[in-house]
Amino acid sequence: MGDAAIQVEGLGKRFGDVVALDGIDFSVPERSVFGLLGPNGAGKTTAIRILATVLEPDAGRASVLGHDVARKPDAVRRRIGLAGQFAAVDPNLTGRENLRLVGMLTQMASSAILPRAAELLTRFDLTDAADRPARTYSGGMRRRLDIAAALMPRPLVLFLDEPTTGLDLQSRNELWDMIRELVHDGTTVLLTTQYLEEADRLAQRVAVIDGGQVIANDSPAALKAQLGSAVAELGFEDEPTAEKALGLLAAPYAGVEREGVTVRLSTNEGPRVLIDVLRDLDGAGLAPSTLAVHEPSLDDVFLALTGRHAESAGAGDESGESKRSRRRAAG
Amino acid sequence: MSAATSVVERPVLVRAVRDALAITWRNLIGYRRVPQLLVFSTVQPVIFVLLFRYVFGGAIRVPGVPYVDFLMPGVFVQTVVFGSLATAIGLAADMKSGLLERFRSLPMARSAVLAGRTLADLTRNVFVVVLMVAVGFLVGFRIHTNAFALIGGILLILFFGYAMSWIFATVGLALGDPETAQAAAFPVLAPLVFASTVFVPLESMPGWLQVWAEHQPVSVTASAVRALVLGGPTASLVWQSLAWCVGILAVFAPLAVRRYRRAV
Image (cartoon, rainbow over all chains, first blue to last red; front, side):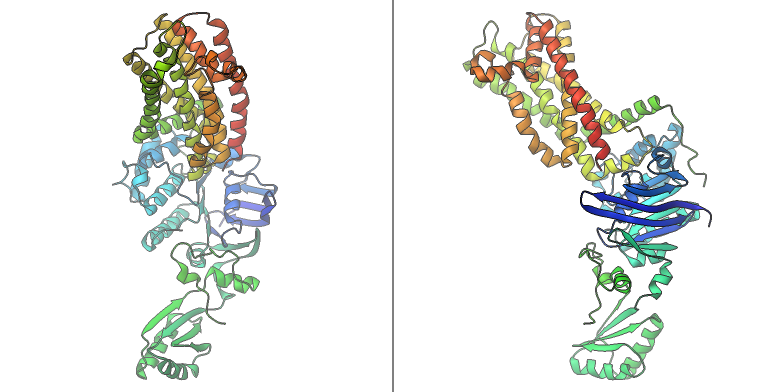
């Protein structure tokens, strides 16, 4: 890792009486992925907008590749790509025309625009739809086109604001692969997310933001180490069976509890434990009828860091991914 | 990866013109792909022509000329005034969709979004006004002067429409929502278009209304165009209309630019 691609010091922004950013600091090394993790309204989008020169900060400083975002916005704009929270493509233009427009407006050489657009359309699997107006695209296609647009001028720093919100699993995994590939090719990526899993899979470093402040800045592994563990929920036919299962599991494993027909088991040893548990249960003729595993969520990070749940009720619950942010029914 | 190699350094003015034209191109594609926008902005004035030519027109007396000759110059002006609403709707939609946010993160001229929007709407006005002139001729409108005067009148109407676009650019950016912009525009437009000499002569209104109706920009422009195509003293009216255009631009262009700088 080389120098800092993004440097943020004491950055503050308020909208009227609302303090969106209350003096945040972080720095992002070149050729890495940095995650800003936080619930809705934490200030993630405001931070990205300031770094992408869309908003001006009220306090503090921020620079991208050595250029101050407030004093040299044009120098910053020549080096960045931004894909905001809403796919910002023109619905009346075709995919190819959208990329062409961004190519023109990023001052690309005219001769380079169409080849680059074709390259990105292929890479983002949009070749078949390239000459259809973007309003006919699915949500996932629009999002891919949006990110392709951000990549038109080969930016050195890429800002992605909740890039996978609203994407299905397959599109999400494809996007994750694409982000890794970009970083491999030399791009620095700053992304915001509400999902611990996403930050864990992609980012080398994560800043957790809450109420406009950075409350943790660490590697995903270190953050997860601060957390409780994954929870396995085993569902049984009836309460007596569940009680028998509890009796069987309570001796060898710590952190086992029963609630109705459900037995919960906390573990930080991963799937290994589950294999043992299921074998034990099967051996005793107590095979569960349902099984669910809950990974630690942003909410768990918050609980661990602040002792309270993430403030925004919408955190993680908006895009059909509520299972990962479901709170552990501990009490 | 050789980053940023394909990017060209262009002189400020060249960049401003290229970027404005790129945005104009993009907006005109919108008009081509969503012809409803164009059709509705044409159908409405055509309905007004038919309504006033054949329904209300018989009851309206204007001295000296057939009513249709009085009516059409007013309708041309009315067309661009209602058409300027498209500027508000277009910018508000771009703001709502997040496109303005993207544009603001690009190394493009800060003037391009507003220049490109208003230029596209000017281009659309050329099309709509020429069409309305043709409709006018079909329903019996005749010019009493010459073709040059008609062309001069059309240029004045287009300039007036361009100035009106900047009023609605400000409105669109201030409201940030296309539906709201549309709803908010009518109370602004109604007194300009209806309390005017677009459809009826000044003398038919009560005295207190005449003060407004005589001097407000839509009436002044309609009267100037009438003088150009029907004959009579033109200079004073044309100058008054041009003064309105320049005044509107002087006030609303800076306001729109300021709004754009703050809009996300």
